[in-house]
Image 1 (tube, rainbow, N blue to C red):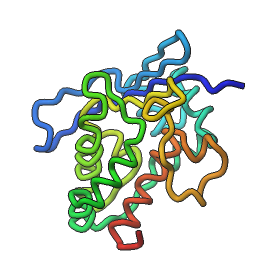
Image 2: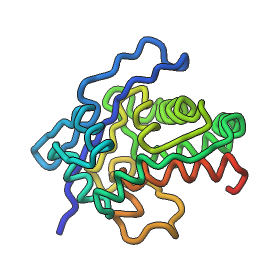
Image 3: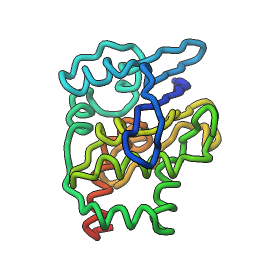
Length: 199
């Protein structure tokens, strides 16, 4: 069966000095499957994260295509990891860190800027969430400063919708190893390993 085309956009406010003047949209997630478009509100996303209740069709489709159960995604996004903030920040501004961020934003194609600010957007979200020495997938998503659209509308990168989930040993099958929600679950563990010098 053919894989449906999604467009996933996250645009949640960043309240740190790296992105002044940004306002939080009321509809942070936009899904496009074929000719239909569903918008997931911040309230619906937060309801899922806090209670596990799925009140939005687009989010439900994203969960179904993640390769994991909704409970696994909820628990994974909410799980917190201790990080060394200084070490992580230095890495994210290094050449190796920029390469890592570029890899991790493989399918980041916001409407206005395309990939022009993908590295800066993800880096600012990670740093904002890690400021207290703790990081989570939910926290990173909540701190994204601009529309973060995951485009799955073509067979070619960056519009093929595939993210690089690490470690590959932790996932099985195409959905688990490339889906956006799987990537969001694994990213904070990856960042913890980096901050502790294990990667």
